Length: 343
Image (tube, rainbow, N blue to C red):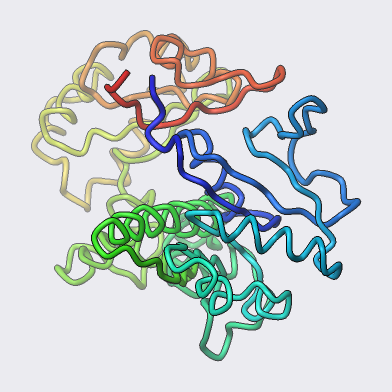
């Protein structure tokens, strides 16, 4: 496959979290990424290949002392030749380094200057420290994740850092590149994880607006474990299956294959019956180990899947058939998605 971003030049300012992950994904699609790191520091990710001075995430590493006039000039030269600069510092840091958007875009008017922060470049909280959990707490998303009567559950750092951060940043970069193709001009992107994570929850906000979701009640709605046919269940070997037959025809197949009373097919969305239905489903799944259930539901539309560990996922026949995972220096890593038809 000819990677679609070959020829795109990106400068990444070394950091952690969503900005470097964006660069990793863009590099996997063919972009040439140069990561500027502080001089003498150990690489923040995988080790360097001594022959290419690239890390195992495809990026060329350049270590510079930005307090040195010559090495600062080298950084400016790299940015002047780049299509995109990606940085994830607090507001004002790049300006203090003499690499802020005003001066860099004067040197390179076609530059897409992509800024990644938690709270945004302005506003009363913009200078505060934070992490994924803080950002999704402020966006309203964290309050919706968890079971009834229990504390909100941190969804790893996937929603703020990587969903509301990385993916929104990449969307902005690609949109700005398209706009540059029309105007010839670059622009500055202000990506905030609070706003990005809130945007991910737009469908839930729509459900609230239509009255089918109660935002004040965690664990009592359709997709938040309140519903017995959208949840996980323990199996006899202390592992789990996930079920999600939301549509009536899929739920009917689940009822049949679990051997439940067919009358449940007409009561799927009767909330009064949900506690009893949950208990029945839980009781049945406890009678067999996870992989027997996976085989039992394989090829059906009952929307039942085994809950796999990362290692198991990499070795699952479906994922192997699609080459969904790669091995990088002996380590399992998810492959780049999506897949492109162009060769």
